[in-house]
Image 1 (cartoon, helix red, strand yellow):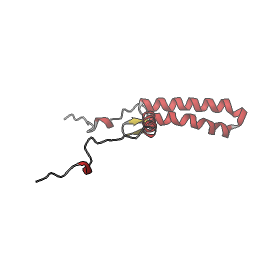
Image 2 (cartoon, one colour):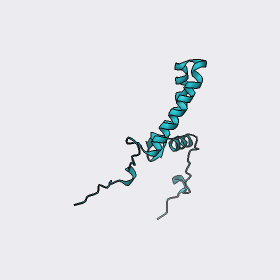
Image 3 (cartoon, rainbow, N blue to C red):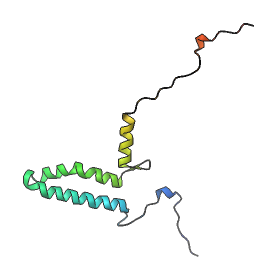
Image 4 (tube, rainbow, N blue to C red):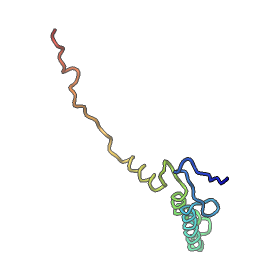
Length: 109
């Protein structure tokens, strides 16, 4: 009998392209490797190998995080945008249209 395994949760489906990585992850690894190697090769004669490696990491880290990081269905870029937007958002205020209790007169019986 022929049987096909189906994931119960479609959102967690992971398409494997190379060694268990998705296309987005493979592209982020290749782009970050090219940028890292290029910056180290260009800067190592001027500031040394160790310093050039340290300077390339802040450039490469967001690229890798964008490919691999996923929180609440958002990639790294969306998560940072929403977090920054939430930090600078004005507080929400609510003003009731009801009269205060002190203004209400008891009814005479």
